[in-house]
Amino acid sequence: MAACGERIEGLPPTIHRSAKCLGDRYPPGRAIADEESDGANSDEHIQWPQGQGKPAVVLFKAEETKNKIPLEFDLPPVLSDRLHVYRNKIAPAVTGRRPDHLFLTWRGKPRTQAAIAVAIEKTVLKYVGVRLTPHQFRHLAAKMRLDENPGAYGLVRDLMGHKNMETTTNFYAGIDTKRAGRAQIELIAKIKKADID
Image (cartoon, rainbow, N blue to C red; front, top):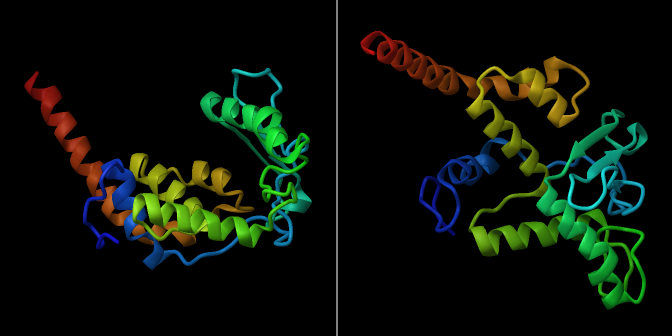
């Protein structure tokens, strides 16, 4: 496994820097309330309101999330199409029927959240060289958003499904001084460039 700060082949530098040292600051956790379920019923939780070739929508009801806040996210069309093909062609060819759940065993039974987490961790470690839990992907997403747009805590709060801004700022503000400094340097450079032009 690569050391903190060492470049991993094929991983974009921004994501690599964010992911590589993330595990030290953010411990593993969970977002889905029921650990015995995969949390993703393929009809109820993933929908294609605009049809195939358009973004699918991932939906979780308030009672299904840790914070009791409903979550709704669009998926990119490429991923949406892959899920559609998996659900309607690949999984039925393997299991003999269209699946009710997104994550299945080879026998067509729903995988538990714990089994999915282990599979994700092993796959990311094998192909990327980074030990990252599914919950740490949340922190990676927040960190990447704040690196791109320092101070965007409202957006991060919505992305994380936090009930209030205090949770978000308490969790992520401690790493914001470097971001703020970089943003200030970029602003000064932009102003200097505008004065020269």
